[in-house]
Image (cartoon, rainbow, N blue to C red):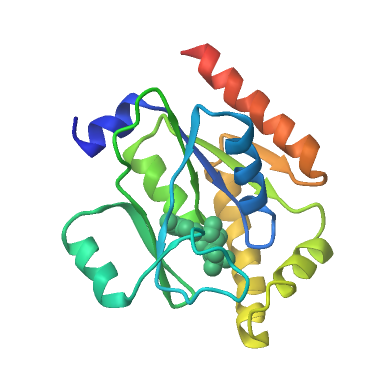
Length: 189
Ligand code: 5GP
């Protein structure tokens, strides 16, 4: 089976949303709870943050990333604030549904290629909470400001293409709501 055939035979759930909304924590909770979900590991040219897990991304350099673009090895990729981020074409997945945790431009690309993909867009409970999370990651201050601005810009674009919008006001409640959405799509097939 080719990689793209594997994608078309599984469902794709895209979790997107502006930075600082808690997407990473949410997708980890989803895959912990549901063994049928398979979390794609992205490639990035961003430097690993202090304390960040080695498995958070495939950390790579620009040359290797650009080579993979040339080889057609990404389902989608984007340049986010000066670094590349991309979803490698998923491996064959027997009976698993793919979860992508990506920003809005990537979500738009995946929806264009796979209109049946389900885009769940996550919003922060408040701008203050979002800013607190973005500042708490140990990025340099100028990067934090860029990320705050980017988050404000991404929101209306994501809302316009989302299938579902979820406010992450409480992790447990949010994850339960997202599991309901996933179940609803599975039972509709
Ligand atoms: P961070 O640097 O905070 O880990 O990620 C920056 C943004 O890139 C986040 O919104 C994250 O969801 C997004 N992102 C992570 N992996 C990918 C990917 O493979 N493709 C795209 N388009 N965005 C990604």
